[in-house]
Structures are given as C-alpha cells and as structure tokens.
Length: 137
Image 1: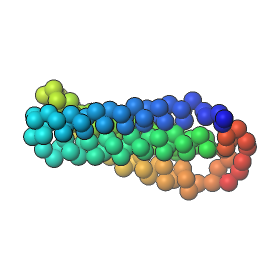
Image 2 (image 1 turned 120 degrees about the vertical axis):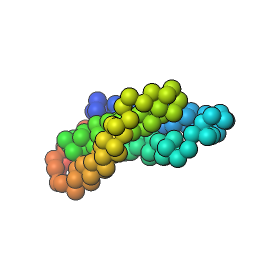
Image 3 (image 1 turned 60 degrees about the horizontal axis):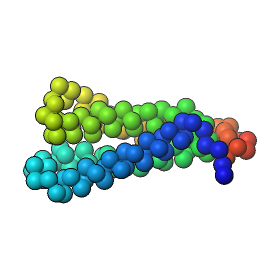
Image 4 (image 1 turned 60 degrees about the vertical axis):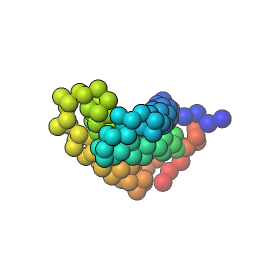
C-alpha cells in the first residue's frame, strides 16, 4: 500500500466529504419543494460543488504522485471556491444569510485559478516522490 502525504490525504478526504454533501443537497433539492423553486443559482452551486469535489480528489491524487506547490495551491483554491461560491449561495438559499453575497465572484475566480494552477503543476517538470520512490521529470 503506497504512503500518501498528509496534503494528498486531506484533499482526497475533503473531496469525498464534499461529494457526499453534494449528494445530500441534490437529494434535498429533488424532494423539498422550497428547494425546487430555488432557481438557477442553486443549480449552479450544485453543479460547481459536484465538479470541484471531484477536482479535490484529483488534486489529492496528483499530490500523492508528486509534491508540488502548484497542486497544493490548486487544492486550496478549490476549497476557497467551495466556501465562497457554493457555501455562500447555499447559505443564502437555505438560511436566508446574504451578508457575504459580494464574495461569490471571488469563489468563481478561485475555481478558475485552481484549474490553472493544476495545469501549471502538471506541465512543469519537477522532482517528486511517486508512491515512496524518487522520480524526476
């Protein structure tokens, strides 16, 4: 069994928890009439939540393969996006909390930057650890 670094395990676990939360919110949206009326903002939040939960798992797997500040940045930016975009929209719809509505675009920007950081991390050659074995390239 390979050893995964702490950051890799955290991103994989957080991605799995976020995916489980997405399933719960999607089920609620399908069965709770108030959420069925929530409109396109809630649907967009659910779409982004699902996509970036899987993105966190991907980042964790990339970090398990090779240590990279770009991968770490990508994971942190995805978490920031989930909080600023998805949680923010969900809090407004579910609880009526609207205090941080202006931060939603920052969450979307964090998502974009996360994917760009992941791309840079993949494209840049680097020396890293692959499942406990030193590699280069």
